[in-house]
Length: 249
Image 1 (cartoon, rainbow, N blue to C red):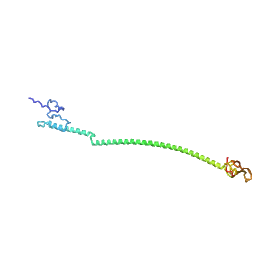
Image 2 (image 1 turned 180 degrees about the vertical axis):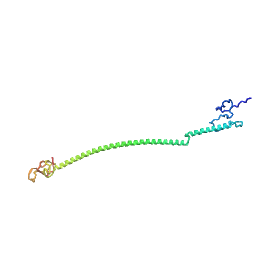
Image 3 (image 1 turned 120 degrees about the horizontal axis):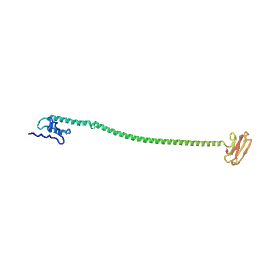
Image 4 (image 1 turned 30 degrees about the vertical axis):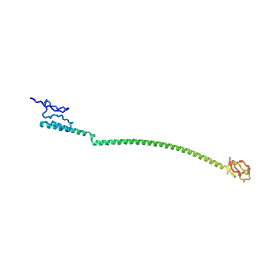
């Protein structure tokens, strides 16, 4: 009588390990039956799988091979996670520190650029203000030069008028005679002279030949009033008494 083979226990969703080729329906004598172990299981799940995979009859057949496979799986899984942790630089404290410093540096850079733009604007505004003030100063300097030129012209005009008045006054003074005896051509110029204001009844004038000490009278008069006038030539003397002043015409 043939004893039916005990069906292999397989965890749901995990396929059983196939038998070696050429032995149909029988498991390899040295193989450990698969209990559906997975490298993704936790340590507790793996331990439970080991207990379940241990033969119930107390025999140690295949236990060594199974343990080796289990250890290899654990080492492979641990190496996988260690490698994963090692290959991820963003998980290290150094990376976090450097990233924080990089962020801080970027913020400082943005602040510096913002300050730089602000300062550039202020410099541009100040430069514009300076240029405007310089233009204003130039305009005022030009206006001042124009005013100074006009003032100089006015001063020159005043000086010319003053000189003319002074010259006229000097000329009038030079051509004005009062009471006394005057030598024509020496003391006074030849020409016509007229009383500056109306004379009184005591006015007397005389035209004398020069060098005769008044003995040679060419002409004389007691006008008695009004504005008398005389014509004098060189070589004559003119005598005026109580007639006021005479002015050359």
